[in-house]
Image (cartoon, rainbow, N blue to C red; front, side, top):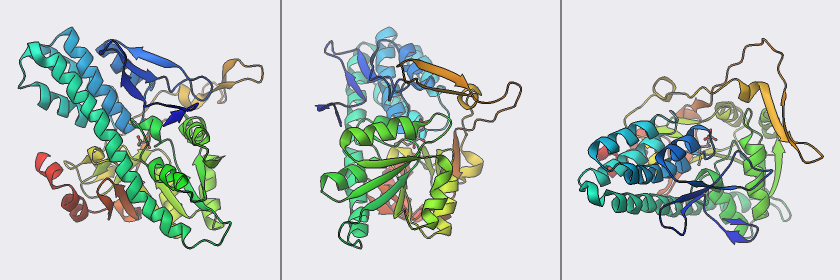
Length: 367
Ligand code: MRU
C-alpha cells in the first residue's frame, strides 16, 4: 500500500540483496521508522518484541529470519537451531510455524552450500504469495460489501467494524480484513470503518486508523466496549476481523475481545466475517478453546500507556495502581457457530470442517 504516495510493503530485501527491511510498528502512528534486520537474532527479536506483528507478517519475517540464519550457519544443525529459535518467538499465530515448515521443506533436501540462495528464494515466494492471497481475499470480500451497498439508499455508507489490526501492516500487503475494505473504497463504494482501539496495545487506534487514514478511508476509532451499542442501534452492517489461527472445524482465534464482538453481532444479527489466508488454518486441531495456545504478555502493556504529548514528546504513564494484579491474555477464541463466514483466497466459506477441507484439500493432506 502507499505511505505518503510511495508504494511499500511491510517487508522487503534491501539493495544489497540480503538485508531485510521492515517498519518498526511499535513507533506508529507517531514515527514511521524503517529498520534493517541483519541476523536471525534480529528477526527473532523483531517478532518477539512486536516490532513486526500480525500473523502473516510474523510468518514472512520468520521466513526471512531463516534466510539470515543460513548466512550464519547453513548446516543441518544450523537449520534446526534457527527453526527452534524462531518458532519460539510467539505462540498463537500458526502462520509462524507454517512459514518455518515451508522453509525447512525447501531447505532440507538442498546441500548446505546452496541453502542461502534457496532460503532467500523461498522467503521471497512466501512474501509474494501473501500479497496475492490477500488480493484474492479482497476480491472475495468485496462481493459481500457490494451486496450490502446495493441495499443502501443514496448517500448512505456501508459501515464495517473491525478489531485489532488485520490490515496491510499485519501482512506483507493489502491486509486480510482490510483487503475488501480497500478494494471497495477503490471501487468507489461509500464505506466507513469503526476501528476498535484494541487495548492493551491499541493496534486498532494506532495502526488500523493510521493505515485507513493514509488510504483515505473514512473511519472512527472507538473504545473496545462500544461495538455492542453501535450494533444495537443499527450502525454496523458487517464485522470483518482477521485471525491468528483457525481450526479444522472453523473456530477462530484472534486478538482478545474478538469473541465479545462476535457475541454482540450474533445477538443483533449483524454478519460476523473472518478474513484469512489459508496458511492461518491449522488442520491438526479441532477445538479452538481447548487446543490453541493463548499468548500471555507482560503486565506493563496493561498498567502503562504510551503516547505523544502535545509538545511532541513520547511518554509512558502508569494508569493502574501499584500492587494491583493484571491479566494480559493476547487472544481469544470465537467458536465457529458465531462466525457467519470465512473470507478466503478461494471464496467465502462456511466456518465448518467440510467447507474448509473441500476448499483446501492439499493443506488437509499435508497436516
Ligand atoms: O498481537 P498482534 O498485533 O500480532 O495481533 C494481530 C491480530 O490479532 C490480527 O487480527 C491477526 O494477526 C490477523 S492479521 C491479518
